[in-house]
Image 1 (cartoon, rainbow, N blue to C red):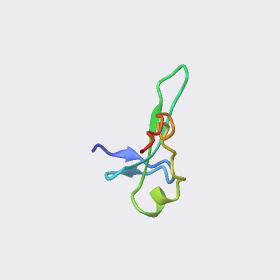
Image 2: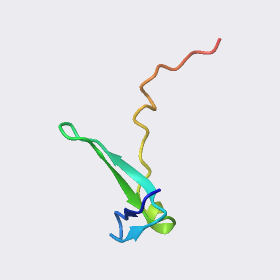
Image 3: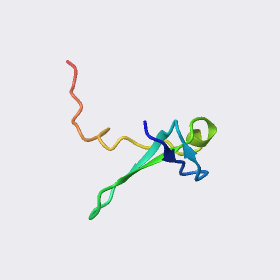
Image 4: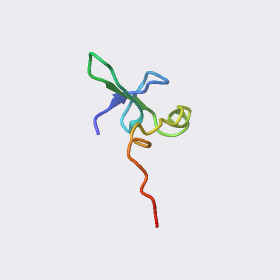
Length: 60
């Protein structure tokens, strides 16, 4: 993976971890990266936007 700027400490890291994906209505979104370890763990867990979009199948 190419080096990215950490969203927490603003330094360049050669092992970036995706911590968030931002979406925009009129503009494309962007991906936020962080340094691995405690910095990446300090970001809140992102919810899955498709988690509740599909109906649950009933088991008989």
